[in-house]
Structure formats: C-alpha cells, structure tokens
Image (cartoon, rainbow, N blue to C red; front, side, top):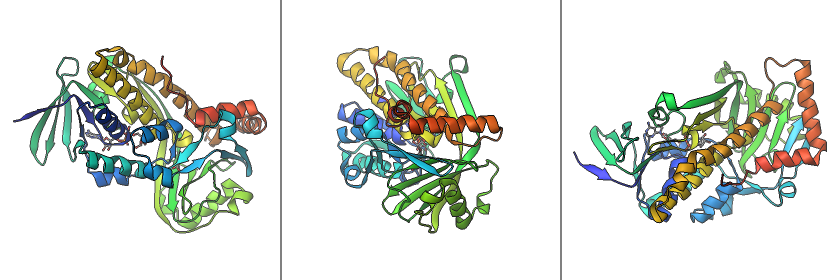
Amino acid sequence: MTVVRTQVAIIGAGPAGMFLAHLLRRAAIDAVVIERRDRAYVEGRVRAGVLEQVTVDQMHRLGLADRLVRDGLIHDGTKLALDGQVFRIDLAALTGGSTVTVYGQQEVMRDLFDAATADDLAIMWNAADVALAGLNGNQPTVTWREAGIERTLACDFVVGCDGFHGVSRGAIPANVRATFERVYPFGWLGILADVPPADHELIYANHERGFALASMRSATRSRYYIQCGLDEDIGDWSDNRFWDELCRRLGPDAAARVTRGSSFEKTIAPLRSFVTEPMRWGRLFLAGDAAHIVPPTGAKGMNLAVSDVTMLGEALVEHYRERSDAGIDGYSARALARVWKAERFSWWFTSVTHRFPTMDGFDRRIQMAELDYIRRSPAAQRVLAENYVGLPLEVV
Ligand code: APR
Ligand code: PHB
C-alpha cells in the first residue's frame, strides 16, 4: 500500500474546503482535498445566495471574481416588512459603504472547481469511509477507500471541512468537546422559479401567519421562502398554494409585484443553531459547518465558512513561512469569537421575524414593538446593518 504525503489534508470540498485549498495553493502550501461525493453533487446543491464583503474580497484575492463581478448583484440595502408594511435598511449608508452581493453558492462552487481544475489542485472525489488517525501526535493520517482500494495520506495537519454530518468533529474526544444548540420549532419551505424578483432588494417579512423571504439569484430568477411546520408534507404544497401564502405574508404592496411561475426546486429545510468548541484539537482544525450551523435568516452560513478558513489560512501560512505557531494556537478562539457573534445575530434575526408556536399576545407585541423600533431608529438600524454586511475579522 502506497502512502502519499502532503502538508495539509482537507476533508470535504464544500465552500470551506475549496476556499482553503485555493488559499494554501496561493501560499505554496501543499494540500489534498478528500471529498465523499462527486463534483456534480457538491456543485448542484441549492444553498445560500448572499455574500458578505469578506467573502467577495476573498474571491477577488484568489483571482476568482470574474463571473462574480459580471453576474453578482450588489445590494446596498435590504427590506423588512411587518404585517405588510415594508421599510428599508440602507446598509451602505449605515455602515460607511459596505454592501452584500447576491451570487448563489452554486456559482461560487463552480468558480472554485473550475479554477481548481485549471490550477491542478488535488481533489480525491468519491472517497468512502474517510477516517482520521494520529491527530494528537506528530504524524496524522487520513485513510479512505476509492473504488474499493484503500488509500492513505500522511500529513502535518488535518482540516475538517466536512460539514455538519462529517466525520471530523467526532474525531475530537467527547471529554474535550462542548456543543451548544438550539433547534427551532419550524422550517423554511423554499422555491426557485425563473421569474423576475418582486423587488430589486431582499424582503424579510414578519407576518401574523409566519415569516416569508423574497430573495433572488438574478434579474430573471427568484428565490422565495415561507416559514412552515416541520411535519409539513412538501406534496401538499402546490405552486399555487405557495404563491398564495407568500403573497399574504409579504403584504399587498410587495405581493402586487410578485410574478408567479412554475417552480423548478422546492424543499423544506429545518432551522438550527449549533456550535462545537474548541475548533482545534491537536493537529485537527474544524472549519465551516463541521463546527457550527446557523439558521439561514442572517445569510451567514457560507460566509462563516469563508471567514473561518481565511483565519486558518493565515495561521498555516505563519506556521510554514515564519515558523510561528501563534496563529494556529489562537485559531479556535479567534474563529469562535466571530462565529458566536454571527450565531447571536442569526438567532436574534430569526427570533424577531418568525412566528413561534408558543407565542402569545405579549410575545407578538414585543416583536412588533422591536420591528417598529428598528423602522424608526437609525441606531437600531445600524446594529442590524453592521451585522448583516458582516463583522470584521478581528485579531483577538
Ligand atoms: N468524508 C469526506 N467528505 C465529506 C464527509 C466525509 N465523511 N462528510 C461530508 N463530506 C463533504 C460533503 O459531501 C460536502 O461536500 O464535505 C462537504 C461539506 O460541505 P458543506 O456542507 O457545504 O460545508 P462547508 O464547506 O462548511 O460550507 C458551509 O455552505 O453548504 C453551505 O449550508 C452550508 O452555508 C453553509 C456553508
Ligand atoms: C437565499 O437567497 O437563498 C437567501 C437569502 C437570504 C437569506 C437566506 C437565504 O437570509
């Protein structure tokens, strides 16, 4: 059996793994990505669509922003609605010029994979039974099976970018690992349809009947969501029923601008907040969904994956170039400081915009008061805006 050697083994070829692979390549650090599925599967998953400036900057730095510049939609504002009354948050004016960019995760993945092919990055697709060993010693190894053949990779470090259901997090012994979690008593029913969006910005709507979100992928492709029960059967949601419910929740003004059409994607996703600590154990680092999950309300999932690996990339460069371990020793604390702020924001934004089954009249009026306060107070809007566009990558 041949043992291949690399400096950094990356488990998972999602946004976290692929951004890191490109970052390390730019720094001439040798890395191999080991992915359980194939490219078509990873690229085909319909996920997030809003990029923070930190993520956009990273695409530029990696030289991967050509299509993003051409096709991404820069949003300098976002909208909220309370029982049909729509108001605007001027993100750019409130944050000294920061914006967000609408560009689907599928497009990001296509850019990362196309460049990986061009740059000849090592990606092992269809890797079954990935297992990690020696993480607490000096010479970790990753083993997997590929078309029935056993493969072994020896490395200096392993980075677990294998998402919430991956193997990496579980490789940290239970007695050193702490997890923190909130499961929300509802999900999001989302559709994609090739119709022009109702608005040129996103609308996050709190309505008596539940949350709704009007989003988009382009000027001709809309992405809409409505809050639904977790026991809901997708088969019960015809397109017509979906459009009717969406329009009710957005309110008459926005509903008048909704173009209906047949959906080509319809799924229900649960909402969860989850953090595992620490994000490093021995020679294993965790990044992205392997370490934390946010509810989609704040649009933070993919952005957090990118900010994690940006910090980890810096730390690994410091290790190899400057022979300093300060960065890798500080990675977990530095990443978690930003993760928890995004967790807080996503939890808060979910709490003020959704209908909870246990809500009584008091809770509802508190929500209404909070949204009305945001509508009228530039100070409250600023707090929302600076979190929504993404907090800076501070050094702790
Ligand atoms: N071995 C190898 N690869 C694995 C394993 C395993 N045991 N388990 C999972 N993977 C792969 C998955 O197939 C997937 O391609 O790891 C990758 C993890 O990708 P994501 O789940 O996208 O996680 P991440 O890169 O952290 O990105 C997080 O992007 O996908 C969104 O909702 C997600 O917004 C979040 C962000
Ligand atoms: C999306 O377009 O898929 C989207 C946008 C904003 C969110 C969540 C999802 O907060």
